[in-house]
Length: 346
Ligand code: ATP
Ligand code: MG
Ligand code: FE
Image (cartoon, rainbow, N blue to C red; front, side, top):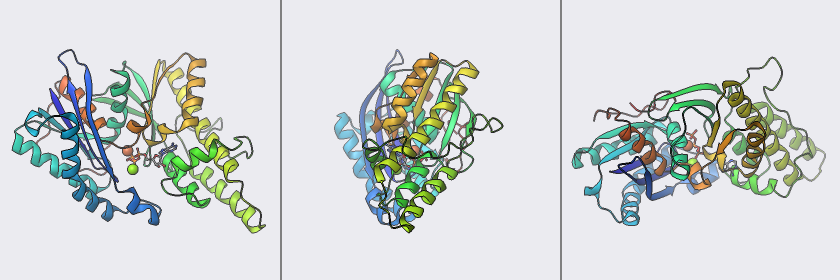
């Protein structure tokens, strides 16, 4: 069974193709991504109108490349999964419209599916089926959540989330403050490897005894970094960029891993998956591995390419929906920018 996955929720146009075997195995055949990130750099963030237009231009060429890489044709497709939310409304609509057109003309079932569940599903391409239950730490540009995943095809429960900024958003804002390019994750990660993580004691949000156990807060950290940098600039001092990055990154990784391990331990869950763009972070992975090992938790993190937005993760999620016999979506499917994570497919 060949499943096509289409992703267009933000600034990446992604097309992925997987093969679902009779025994339930899933094989990745193509994973093509066209990003409009270069067009957003000078604005310091994604501009929705530019993203939508870029999706329109990139959709068909990206589709062609994916089929070329897979060595398949459109007529080989047995089912289509498309991100229908959450994300930018206009951007989502491009993928949803394309998917509807392909599904209609090929006469195959269409699944409108959740981008966040897709981020979690990405890991199955690297490490096989997820055990049930598992704990997912979903950390991306727009979300930071702890999820209990009982079944990737339908039962996902949010047990905690950020009360303000997402982890990736904090990276992007801090990068702007210290003059690094957008998106901030990769350049901060790189600079941090040259810096001292103990140089500056930045705050760990929501870690007090009376704070919500599984929620996150990153806006205080972001403000604290900005204040620290501004104070040095006022005094005409040079900013130790590497140390600021390392110390900021340590604060983020510390809070994320501490809360995730605590949740897994308290809920008696033996496997943790970290996914979303921030899961590509080097320090987060090392610290999570250390703390999971100490707590006897199995840790799974997909390769960096599968952590950021792509179509393969939606195809992988589609394979689970098909294998589980989930009812396909109707062809009047539309985008839902605020689709909750508990709704895996519509
Ligand atoms: P969402 O999935 O919530 O809708 P999104 O799709 O925009 O948001 P992703 O593509 O999953 O987000 O992730 C992008 C985010 O990941 C950006 O904020 C970026 O800075 C961050 N990021 C990417 N690489 C790294 C890294 N190595 N370290 C930290 N953050 C990173
Ligand atoms: Mg992106
Ligand atoms: Fe994403």
